[in-house]
Length: 159
Image (cartoon, rainbow, N blue to C red; front, side, top):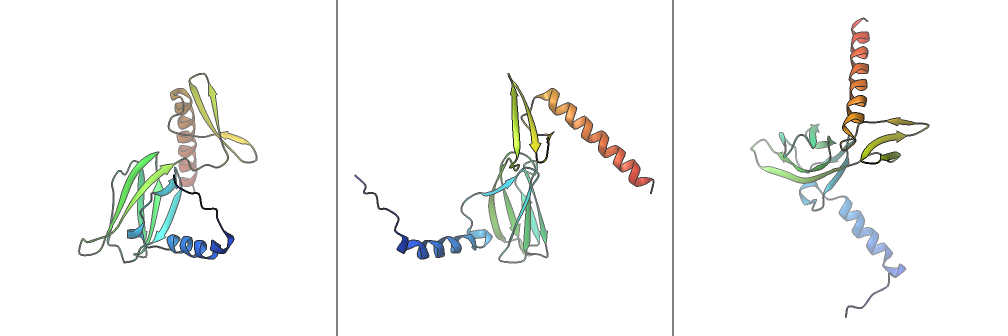
């Protein structure tokens, strides 16, 4: 039977050094999934300059390179995919597994029987678009967002 070894404070500096080392590894050494929220972006620095980036499933995530080495990953919808960075010769310099999950901290999910609606709450709660919400709710909110965007585009064109 395995014996439990309690955590000892004397091991804390070694554990901290190990964790710090794990957080500063370059992209090719990332073994765990890179987590990013829906409609959120996260970035990290590549070990080498990237000439191209390929996303396994662009409906789940997108990726952008800035200054050749700063890679930003944007979560588009829930799911998992991978992002590959290539150098000028086409050699793989990074292959990162990406998991996209809910990115909102102050989020409330309202269930009315089988209907689900999602709200983002700060000073007050507002309905938001979230995959998995009831079709009627999702359609109503998306129609309102698109009309608001149309009005904003028209107003910006008048300037």
